[in-house]
Amino acid sequence: MAHLQTLWILQESGPMPMTHLADVLGVALPNATGIVDRMEQRGLVERVRDDADRRVVTVRPTQAGGSPPRRSTAGAPTCSRCS
Image (tube, rainbow, N blue to C red; front, side, top):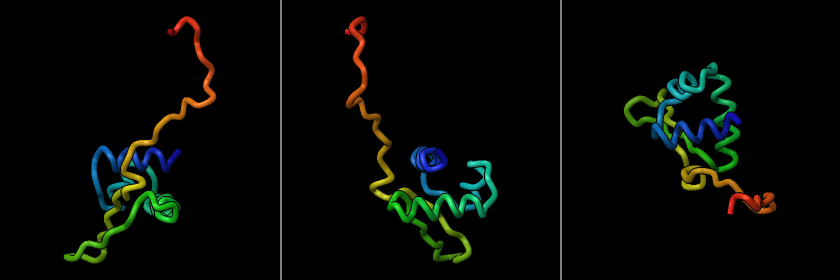
C-alpha cells in the first residue's frame, strides 16, 4: 500500500526531496528510505542527487512508475443490470 501511495504522491506533486516525501507520507525518514529502496529495486522510482548540495536526494518516478496503475477487469463478475 505504501508503494501505491508513494507513486500517487510523486505523480501528483512531481519529484521531491526524501525529507519532504517522508513528511507527506507521515513516516520517519528511515521508513521512507526503506520504502524508496524497495521501489527503486523494482524500477518504479529513482534517486537523483542535487548538484548544488549533494546531501539533498530527490525521488522521482521512472517511466515504469510514472503511469498510474490500471485496474484489471479480467475475470471480474459481470452485472446483468449494469448493461
